[in-house]
Image (cartoon, rainbow, N blue to C red; front, side, top):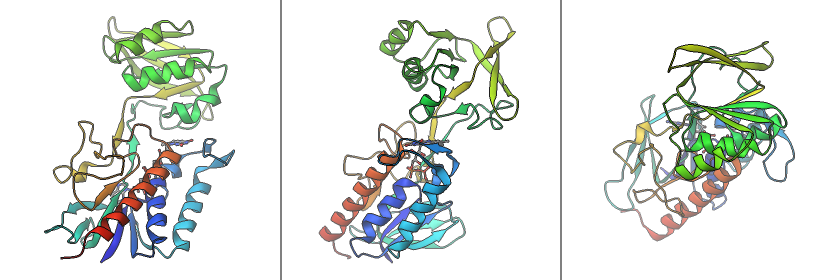
Length: 310
Ligand code: FAD
């Protein structure tokens, strides 16, 4: 069995594996895809100390770093069940979709998350060509341009307020008859001269010339009219879905499905730590996931030296 088994090989999982392996303990990492969301990212300009890099490059560097420590890699495998230890300090199981159960004295869960998509025509074709999901990552790319934010919940309105300081104009589109963000955020949004809000707006398409987005269409649900906005960017802010469905009922999840952790990365199960976008950590970013993965591995080590196998 492993001392530490990491599930997920994005920034959080890679950091956890490196920190664990550096303690000289038997470390394994199992993941569907090395690099996680980083694989889907074009330009990365906020990976501190690196002015510019690209997703596939960072992902390859993560993999090489993990390999250099002799971590046992179990690639292209999906975990589908977490089996708690039968007694304190005992072995925890991770069942793979392909059948086998991996065993470890401690487990770091880092399965990440995925952005909810609108699914309208043109969205997938213009991903990274004007359609984006991350204001912290891509806001500066739209300096002085017109953008829309889809979603009037807290994340959508926060994104709009954030973008208003960078771009020429922000239009918030909310499907419902009213914004759902906290009142204080709505008030702030209303105070900004370069933001407008359309409620009852059902996005129906994103348009461009194939290489670049230039417009978005929506239906005004109050009267059925179709409208078009000319713009350069669309920020889709309709939810981040943690890849935690398989953990339901085994460990505590928040009402959004995030793995509940404390500031040491501990979950509701002893010996099971978690890190990154799949958790209740407030901000979802590469450097934050890496810090959290390191924290989780150090906590796993702490757990191991304080417990003995029964
Ligand atoms: P992820 O990167 O999501 O990795 C999850 C890992 O778990 C993957 O290896 C996956 O295959 C695996 N996995 C999931 N479920 C299972 C399972 N059941 N069994 C086995 N393996 C599983 N952040 C920035 O800081 N800067 C940016 O510029 C930036 N740009 C972004 C652009 C895009 C398009 C996207 C989508 C995100 C961007 N982000 C950016 C956010 C950043 O990518 C995430 O915060 C970060 O990748 C989270 O790391 P993570 O390790 O928690 O999860």
